[in-house]
Length: 74
Image 1: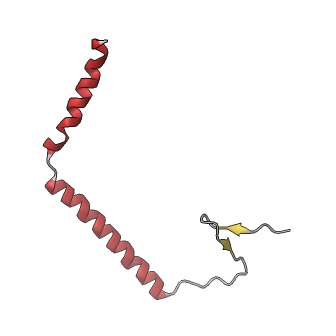
Image 2: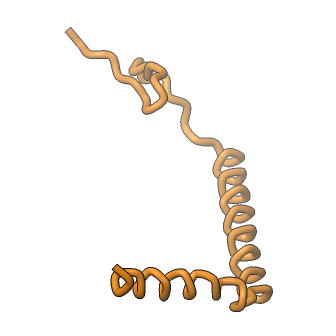
Image 3: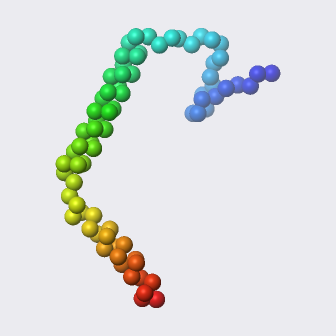
């Protein structure tokens, strides 16, 4: 008896050998999609680097200093 195979989302996988080969257009679309993704990722990283204001996160340093002094109070 052969066990049924399932993908991670629970859909059954047909193992009939009827898998369609990748066409040139599907490869082209995948490369375009990957290029758009990495272009957006790079844009976000560069924008964060350009518009980063270090003064925003001074509150975290103050909270950390408070937590380090807290045991001395008790």
